[in-house]
Length: 74
Image (cartoon, rainbow, N blue to C red; front, side, top):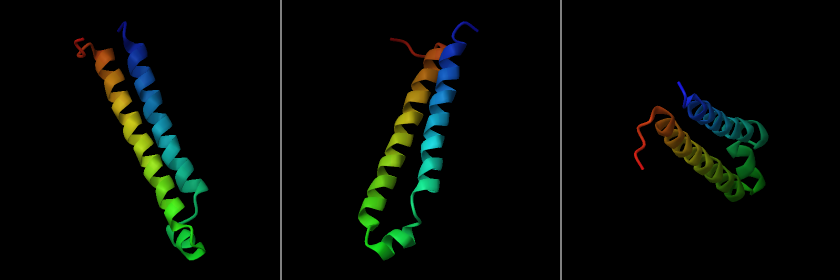
């Protein structure tokens, strides 16, 4: 398949989105700990940004996959 590079890049983009969530789970404290310290709002804002980036990576991967499959008609 001559457009397989697009599909490979789409998979890599999805892996980057998954890595962002894994980093968030490992690096951020638990919600209860953040609430006890009084830093719940920044904790929540960080998670909102992480999930926004995941949504963007899924959208980009979908676009790259459709280009790779030849279904995107410009």
